Length: 487
Image (cartoon, rainbow, N blue to C red):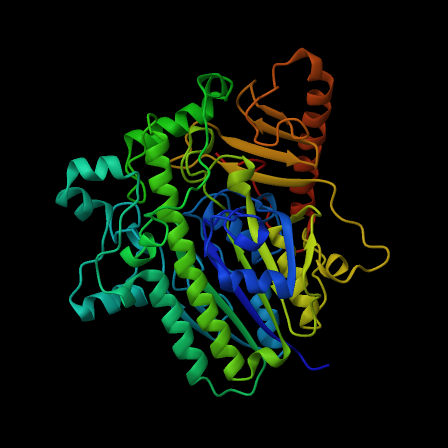
């Protein structure tokens, strides 16, 4: 067979429970539903870090954060295996968000159309890495002012405080960042004439906050009842100190246009989740347009389409907003593979997999070997039901201290099907959940004497995994030795 076209679509901060065909009956996602019905969906895909850059660096290098030494959103990194696809003869194009640092680095792609964070200004925390991306330029040409935390607050201080980051888009519809990325991809697909196989990465900025769908999309969810969390004082009291500090940080600061409140009511959270759902549906429509354009140009005759996200969003679960925690609602993301001939249709795989496993899966499809230093595993054994395939029995995630998550120097999550452990490097308290009886992770058993032996065993296994991973990453040829843990 010839080399297939490979289309990798990545959203930003999309929860696993946002696709109707995978059980989210309140969602309106006909095009993602089609990918699920005609492809293979992994229902237990976990990211390696609940932070954008750390997660993306892992995906595009095939390693956990301890292997990439990228833990926060401000550390420099570039992809590795994209260059292998280019050497193999692929024309490699990135449209939208990649979150490479620096933002405009080539990253092994032949072409990049960079669109970065929706709300981020070009000063303050951005400093020397700030650029005017394609979306910034288009807004300027139109004479439009980019919506941000600053002008939204200036226009309506009290409304801003009550919004929880949820605003209806008020500029031209085609200038919404997700529509802009979708339109750019649609235009490029229809213009391209190269005969080489295509690797096309499309990065949608949404549904990352601000949660800002067009009014007409928000109207579709006006009467939709979306599940909201019931957070109790007892649950909050059992959370580690670092989580309380994170919640305080999100309420006293102003990140991504989200002015979080600990007293948010069910009505507040329902409004927030309707905005979020409407933004996902907007992206779903763009996915449909992109698929139609690819099909019309013949690219889908032999292609593999992969849809996923870099991490998810708490949306009020456990009293939190956005990311930085190790709950399933933050770490678990959608992962769907679709192909007319290479991927089985209508298959649901409930094996534990990690987002980084996409890397060797793509390389194998391109007839390239998996690099010896990869910590990722190809998904083809699961997709094709190959004899001898051994699924993961455990998944991991790591996060370090940054300017928002200031309460813990380093955090490691270990999860199997039945239990989850979260270890905080500089805290005697942690998290332990019996997922068989507490799937929603509300009852932290860390200090429960009845499971102390299990907790201590899992702590030892987790620290052994982390230490072995660090040592292995430093033994690799040409590797500069790194610090054991980030400061």
